Image (cartoon, rainbow, N blue to C red; front, side, top):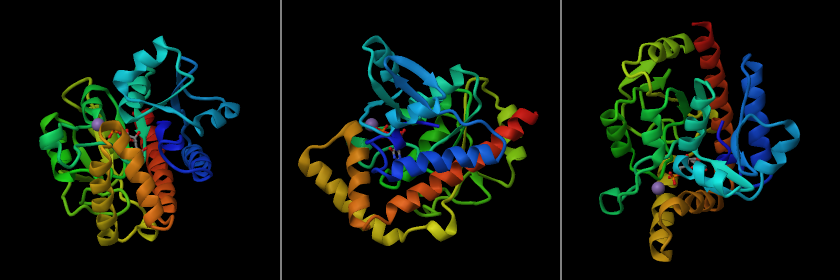
Length: 278
Ligand code: PSU
Ligand code: MN
């Protein structure tokens, strides 16, 4: 599991603590072993002791894959690993399955800014099953799926034919393939034609926790326009927009975020057990 979503760059306190606890429990209850990735005091970590959890709930520097060597060299106190960093670190440690909330992707307006999350490249370059509720809702989801197709990452819809949009179950975009079981995902993973590439499992948020898509899109459009006006760009966009969504949905986005993160962790654990059984 990555650490960015639990840090001050992801969920607000105390929801971040609850998210971490629920994700850890979801993994253990399915018979798998949770491991959080982070850079602590300049050391790359895969798995933290219980008494270290407080450290990742606090103030962080965002560490994508390319930042990890810098975080080590400079001895960062807490580098919160994004999806790209976590997948790279976990793959190096021999781990096969990774869970997060939402993947980074192609940002809206990327045709002008070139802002494409390093998450997508990492998925294509490391041997890993990544489990997410699709990609973040404020991205350009059609282009994100196109990118994954180009770089050869299979996108599997978990018991669902649609690519989820994080807070909502469907983006209206079809996934290339639908899978029904963890064993099926494990079999796909075992038969990848490129030895060092990954698979994305797109898991929709549970029905009871889903938010209203039209309302969200309005909030997102305003938040992105405000980003533009305030000159907020690049890696700072995600924390800004997430905070804004939290404020304008009167906090309803936070329980939804927790529910999908927990659900993803549980599905990932099932897949990890199936991969181990192979
Ligand atoms: N989705 C969320 N919260 C987050 C992120 C994604 O709901 O905090 C983080 C993840 O760690 C993801 C990162 O890898 O944002 C992508 O950031 P960027 O778009 O700057 O690559
Ligand atoms: Mn970016």
